[in-house]
Figure (tube, rainbow, N blue to C red):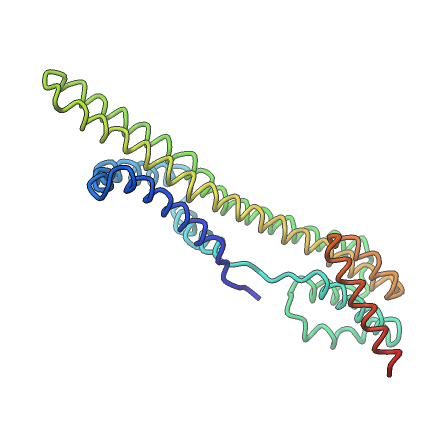
Length: 272
C-alpha cells in the first residue's frame, strides 16, 4: 500500500524556509525582493528544459513529473509480516501440498509475491523461478534508473545554465563599464542565475534522485527476500527453519521484536 511520504515535502520546506530566513534576516523584505529576477529564472529554466529535450525523448521528459511524484510516496514494507506470511505458507504447503497455496495467495496484495508462489505451485524448478523473478527485478531497476536519470541530468544541467546566465550578465556588465553606478546591481543580477541553478540542483533534483535511488534499493531488497521465501516454501522447508533463514534479513532491532512476538505467542498457547 502506498502512503504519502511527509519527509520529502518537509525537507523541501525546511530548505526554502532556511534560505528565506537567511535572506530576510540580513536584508529585510527589500533584500528578499532583490533576489527575484525573472530574466535569470527564464535563462535557467529555459536552458534546463532545452537540455533535457536534447537528451531525452519528449515522452520521457513528460514522464519526469510522474517520477517526481514517486518521491512523495512510499510503499509500506513490513519484513516481519512478510516472514510470517512465508511461515504460514510453508506450514500449509507441508500439510496440504503446494497446490493448496493457489487459493491462499489470492488474498496477497503483493503481485511479486503472488507471482512467485504461483510459479512454485506450477512446479517449476527452483533455478527457473529464481531466474524469472530476478529478471523482473532487473527490469524494474532499469525502469527506475531510466526515470531517475532525468532528475540526475536536471541536477547537472541546472548549475551549468546558472553559470551561463552569469556569464551573460557579466558580458552585459562589462559593456557598461563607463557607468560605475551600474556595476554593483548588474553584478548582483548576474550572480542570481548561478544561485537559481545551484538551488534547483541541490534542493530539488539531486535530493529527489537520491530519494528514488534509495526507494529502489529498498524495493530490490524486499523482493530478494520474497525470492528466498518462495524457494524455501517450494523446497518444503520446515516453517521454523524458514523463519530463521529469512530473519537473517532483519535488523537487530527487528530481530528482537520478532523474538519477543514469538515468545508472546508461545506464552498464549501455553495458557490456552
